[in-house]
Structure formats: structure tokens, C-alpha cells
Image (cartoon, rainbow, N blue to C red):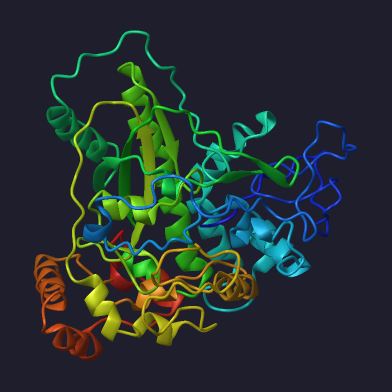
Length: 456
């Protein structure tokens, strides 16, 4: 998840530090106005005014799909409060906040702030990254005046209204097949469908206007969840850590924003409701697992059978009648148990190198589910020190392979099969011997490395 800021206007100055007094706060949304707190104004979050702790989940704790998905849900399970994610904490938590954090946020839209004379971090590299984010920035800009940060703190508002007359659906099964064809045309490379699961929905959302908490606001009755996946460019990912590589993330978000809105428009024009979501509303990885798109990896990201971890996720909540996909296990947990490529490569040592656990590092972790989690504070601190995002764990994951040719595709398919068998240690050995882990210098990409094309 990456944080985005609005482009500064002539009458909107970016503050030099982040405050908790209800005045100016930098966020993915608008810079707050200098206005006194009234009786109806929410109290800004701070170390003394922490996000609401909902406590143990009061809904259905276990789901029949849990075992097939590999979910180990404990009695202490709690829904996650969006205000506790590391990026939002960077705006209210004194343990995370700093001028360097503020500069990191500002640098997401101003290439000159973090640029320096170093391969992969020059003004050209940051300008390239900024170009990748333009679709997302336009999405965010359109609703700031309404106090919304679409795609990051709030769901994505679909342009079209829901048609008054519903198109008759012959069957959920047929509609699901047709929807997948539509989604493919609009840019989705992976698509799965599952039922809504309130456990993954954020208990509270973040109010960017007031640096405060606000109630979750997903309409009721949206019982079906569509999950899409789009890939990031393999060759650019190989240059992590660098601003160059960050372009793949930004462009991925921009593609997702367009794809989700297109699918949502299609659904609403047929008379059914659709709420599109990127980094808002609900957790993406567990929904993607339930929808059959992959498994959870040691680096706490989805690993898909088709593209490994090089996938960005989005989802749409809808009442369109659809049939559901089954979860899919292909040996990721068993392979990750013997593999330490991501944890060994992580500079801040933010990735757990042991078995899945239910212990948490800090309040930015999911509570009450035994799985591989990362230390988000260490991860974000490294991002801030770099002046850009990081994806070394994606870069060095054995499932992240170049599949640009027929032969490479066939080898990848063979390797994924091998990694899912008892010969998984042979698969790991092959990755060490002939895999393409390790960093490529950004100048390699700029000079035509990998043909400098969108290589998937």
C-alpha cells in the first residue's frame, strides 16, 4: 500500500511538519484547512486518542472455507482498524511521524524532494515513477472537495449511476463467465469471485479531512465479491530498491483504478450495485485466496500460480448474481516453509524467518490469525529512508520469474509444479542455481535490459 497526496494548489501550502491539533495534516487526501474544532468535528487521532479497539470479533468466527484456504483463525481474532496501518499512523502516531516521513509522502508527487545523484534515484527516475502514478492521482483528485480519498481511504466512486431497470440474469454461472470476459477486456489478468466475508472488512476508516477516525461505510446487501489481479513489469521489479522500480507499482495502481471503474460501470449500467475498492474497505489478500487467485506467502503477500507475487489486487462488492470460485492450493505454504529468500534479502529484517505465528510485532498487524506477518514499522522505515517504496521481497521470491517467452513460460509452469511436490527442495536448489534472483542496476533497464518492454 502506498500513500498518495494531492497536488499542491497555489492557496494550499504543504506544512513542514505533521500536527495532531486539528489544523494541518498531510495525508493521501486533502491538506486540512485551518479551522477550529467544533462540537461536531471528530477528535484527531493521536497517541492519547488511539483508534477504536473493537475487541474480539462478534460475528461468525469460522467459515467452512477456512481449512481449504489455509486460514488458522483464533478465538482472539479481531477485525483490522484502517487507522492502524503504518501509512496512516505516519500522520498521527508520534512513534512513526517525522519530517523524513513527511518528505516521503511529499516525494510521492514531487520528484525533486528525494532525487539524488545515484543510479535509480535521479530526478529522471522519480519523474518516471510520477508518470506511473498519474491515473491514481487523477482518481484521488476528483473527490477531495467532498472529503473523500477514493481508492485509499474511501471506496472508488463509480462514474455511472445504477440503472433503474435490472438486466435479467439467466443464471449466476453464465453471468460469472461473461463477467470474466468483460474484466479481461478491461485489463484484469486474474479474476475470481467469492462471497462477502465481514472478517476482512476494516472496522473503521480514516478521515483524511480531520486526521481522525470515521465509521466504515460499505452499503449492506453487497454479498458477492469480485477480486481482480494485474501484474507488474518483471524487468523493472528487478531494479528494486530504486525509484525506477516504483514505477511498476504506481502504474499498477493506475491500471487497477481504471479496470475496477470499468467493471463497476458495467455492473451498475445493468441495474446492479457495485462498490470498487483498492487500498480501502477490506483486506485484499484473504479475499483473493478465497476467490482462488493464490496463497499467502512468507512475505505476507499473495503468490499466484500464474505470476507469483508480482500481482496487484483490487475488488468489487456487488449484488450482481454470480457463482463462486473455489480456493486453490498449489504448495506455497509448504515451499515457503523451507525457503528464506525474502527474509534473507530484506534489509531491515522485517520478514519473519520462522513458522507462521499469531504473535504480532505492533498495532499494524492483524490480530488473532496464525500466519506469516511482517514488521510493518521496520518495512516502512526502510521505505522512508530510501525515499521510495521497496519490493525486494517480490524481486527475490522464487515464484517471481521471467515468463516473456514460450520456453520461459514452460519452465515456470514446471517449476511451480515441482515446488508443490515433495521435491520442493530441488525446486529451491534450482532457483539458487539458475533462478534470476538478485538486483539489476536501474541503468540496465534504461539501457534496454530485457528489451525494456512490459515483460510479464
